[in-house]
Length: 132
Image: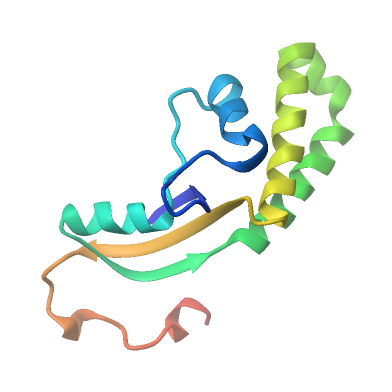
């Protein structure tokens, strides 16, 4: 399974409004936001077959909104634990990401995969097993 935040730019370019720059500088140094096409191409080049690809963007927008609410509710405790600067960085990050997912400036894909070259008889023919 590969689960990752991705760029909506087909060339894996910068996210709108400088979100990627902020994230790289303050939250995930040396992180990257590839487009899902690059992720799938890299998997194929590494002999990994994608079996199922699902965009969880609408779900993640809501998840981050919930995280933001909980974060704000615990503001004093968090400030005591990490200090004002780190608290503010994460406050901006959570709120900004929730907004970015909500308006399609970021995506998050979950890719179920396996080693390529396996017989097709080993594959499930529907997604029913995933939702039962």
